[in-house]
Image (tube, rainbow, N blue to C red; front, side, top):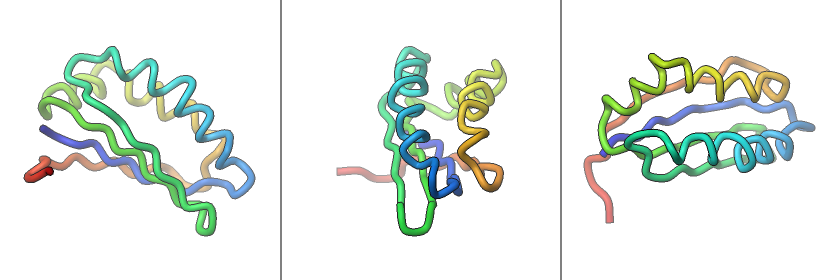
Length: 97
């Protein structure tokens, strides 16, 4: 299993909007993508930092969403909420409970 981690810096007045976008738009679209397992959307209202974690069957499925433009399409939905560009990383899930 692999995880895509995206780190965000939100405008302080846009955190609720970012959460809404993730729940109403990103999650429903992502869950039907090949290899998608689950997703988490973490926010720190004190610092404005956010982290999206999605779990996938394999790295190829993650890359496929980027090569198709799907990932960039989802990120663009947050443009008005951000103070800086998001940072994307991919990790192998080496252990889990």
